[in-house]
Length: 382
Image (tube, rainbow, N blue to C red; front, side, top):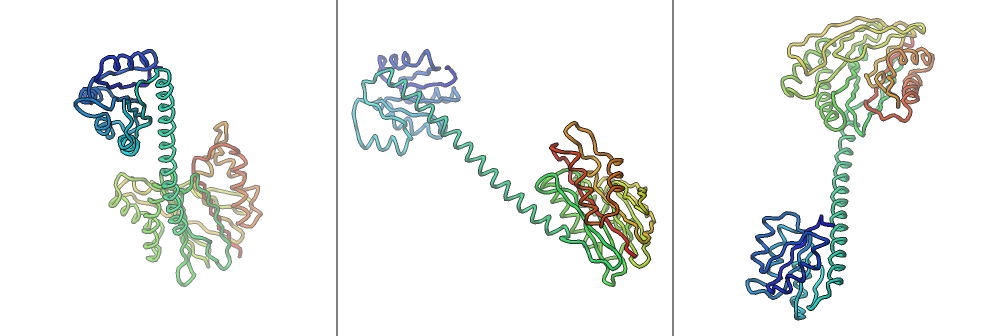
């Protein structure tokens, strides 16, 4: 039991030796015959757990000495030994110096040893309670920060899909943590002729990814109204992110623009998984490669044309859908996702995206979720 150090201070040698004998076989003992000598020992020895000091010493009183130890040893157990009972001294010892016990001489070594052991146990409990309180405060602060981040994200992400004449649209969004790095947004031009859809995935997770996504979404809203082509929008967003946030997170983004009357559209991609176009039960991916935003200056993006016929369904998903893993670390993979699409494609789009997500969660089971999952589906009804 030598992990704790006891400092004993008494100007009378017999008392000092008696104190040393009381603890020498149980604790590491430091001995000083004055307050000044004891303070020097404290400077040279870290981690003194218990201080036992005589009250009446020539250079300074025990209380004066203990008061000087408060700053450097705030958690030490303090015990005063005295040959006199002085109520004022007793009150100062308790209130100012946080003295654990005030013991009148002569003392009984077993009783003093028991007092020290009780003091150490009380100290350990106090330190542990302080640690728990500090941890609770930290968690409460983190919970508040997460709540703020969730509020920001709820404000940024659309609460519902736009109502489109001749189309139906649905989204399934599930962050891996309290807040996520995936994002999506829609914009219908004032005349109702064209629809713009963006789905993205910010590198990283939780609050940093969500806040970076918030910055991106703000820029996106500004550009939506300018009726830029998808490839122009991605190039503009890349330039903004590179200029303002160098060496920060990057964002994978897919952006499409659809002429609602004709069903014709263009897709530009910056690192997102290829979308699926489902026609008459058969799904094919729209091959559209591209570099994620925020990585390389002067990145350019290509426009990939597509056309939706009556009954066609376009599905966009973040990589959390296909990279999800089960408890054995098997990946859900694009083939399973494609098979799930084929199995549920006859459902309305809201039921479709829910079923696609359900298949993923049934596959992963109790495994920890490591990435956000976002699935967007758009179907042409007529």
